Image (cartoon, rainbow, N blue to C red; front, side, top):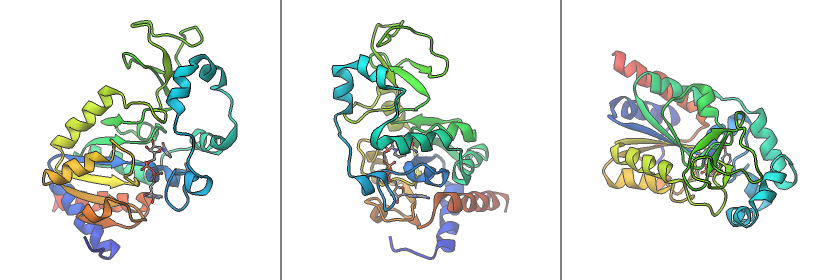
Length: 261
Ligand code: NAD
């Protein structure tokens, strides 16, 4: 796909959005960049500046879950900036545009790699969080989840009242398998999807990155919203080289206009 001027690309994207029968948004950290949450990759990414972190997070958790619970409230080291930004973040115009697309009947589902809970705060309903949600806890055996603020199970580490499994934060750690329920929903949504919005993702984290590939190989269309080139750019039918918070509201308004014509 060769790039076209942004305004023309927005028109093309709006037409695809308005004509899709099962539109899915596949979202990455870039959507929340305008909410002040740093991305990992990309020119301003945390890892681009500081290098990649230790990828054995889940192994370390399994080796000593009690220690993880004890250290949970401490904020030290490289991740302090990230955790503080997440605490402060509120949805931006990109999140609200996705809610509007859903309310207007265009958007059927959001598959998000973000853990920041901002889709929910913005009011979106149909969401699968492939890498979990920082405001929840999860049993590693049966995947039952709890709201982190309404959790009164004792023990260190606490264990699941249903199955006895160890409970951890819902956010998927480095090296941790994606929870089955999330993975199955993502696969089902990708199978139904005939048009996928790829928003603010560098598309290098698997298995998440395989969903757009699946849509494309089944004959669906891909619309990329990202100020920078990614491995998915070459496979995208329309490329919107701009910030999600600026571009998505325009796509939404134009798609609504097409339906009213
Ligand atoms: P990534 O950090 O690898 O890549 C971010 C992408 O967003 C880049 O391609 C960058 O060009 C793009 N981008 C930057 N600003 C943008 C903007 N304003 N609008 C649109 N795009 C913009 O992100 P990823 O692909 O989601 O993978 C990183 C993993 O890290 C994810 O799986 C996620 O779990 C986690 N993460 C989550 C958050 C969050 O919850 N907000 C933040 C950072 C990382």
